[in-house]
Amino acid sequence: MTAASAIGSIFREQVTERLLLRRAERVVRERAPAQQQTVHELYEAARVRLLAAAEMADPARMPAAGTLGREALVLFVHALRVARDPQAELLSPAEAHGWLEQRAQAGEFPKLAEDLVGCRPVLLDADLLALDRMSTEDAYNAYGALERSLSRLRSAIEPRTTTQIRRSRILRLGVVCAIAIAILALLLVKLLQQPSLAQGKPASASSYHPSSPSAAGATNGKIESNFGVHTQVQENAWVRVDLETPQRIERIKVYNRADGWQDEVVPLVLEVSSDGKNWRELEQRSKTFTQDKPWTWKGDAVTARYVQVRRPKQGYIALTEIEVFGSAGSE
Image (cartoon, rainbow, N blue to C red; front, side, top):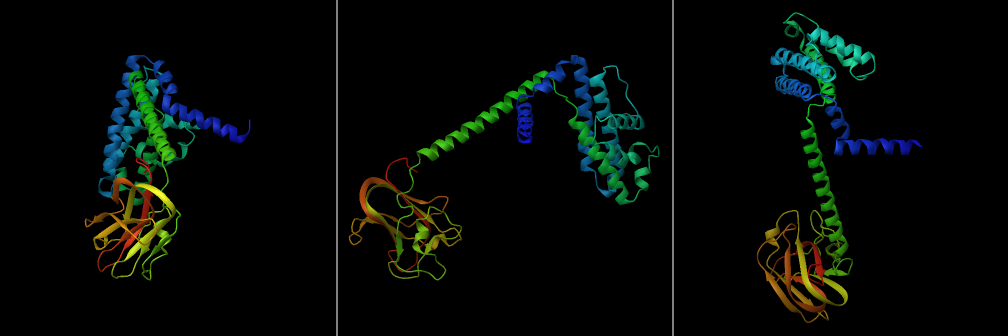
């Protein structure tokens, strides 16, 4: 087996376990119901203390955070011990620390050994004012080591019942199925989507603002972050698309500029022509439109070669894209 295939196999196993939780259910089923209930209660008690400690981990309340963290560690250790032996006795903080050190040295918690050394002042010092007397830096370091130890212990405990595990499995599979359905639906829409008849076709404008790209920016299939074409201020400014051959047109979408001043673009007139000289008006627009809510014309099909957006009075045109569709539902 190659390294790549081995890594792939491990990845698949981890993903499968995350979804199906078979190992977790198998572990819990080996415990007596009362035993698992005790594990759950201990885990929840530790979790509550851990959350409270995290909210108090500032210089003024660090000693209180350390005390809560110490209690959480003792409770997590007891949950681990009860999961193995329902008759296990509750240990003191120092005993819990020693138990963890033995397990870490045996390789059960390989990443825990260093942090156990760092949190010794919190767990082993019988002086209740030990954290109060530490410097801020030392207190933060000791609490940080304790917090990392708690995180690793927490992940080693399975507190759920078989019913809860099965519910989690159903929920996770449901989420995965919903995501898969959504992706398939998007792919289907993409496959069925007819591209704009205007995409990549020649475009021109009555004039160009100094910062404007060529009018091809209005038919490049991209919704730019500013504009695709920008004319000068003039009478009857226009942006025109040449579909190159007469096309059956049922829908046209015009996207406004995206960098502001959208209300300055209107009013506009949407026109089509077969020869580029004689124009037929499809619609006038006086209400502001945007990129998210483009100006959309949809009406009786027309056959034309040219599509034009025109400013019927003094002003300019700044747009990001003009899309032309030849059949209903082709967006």
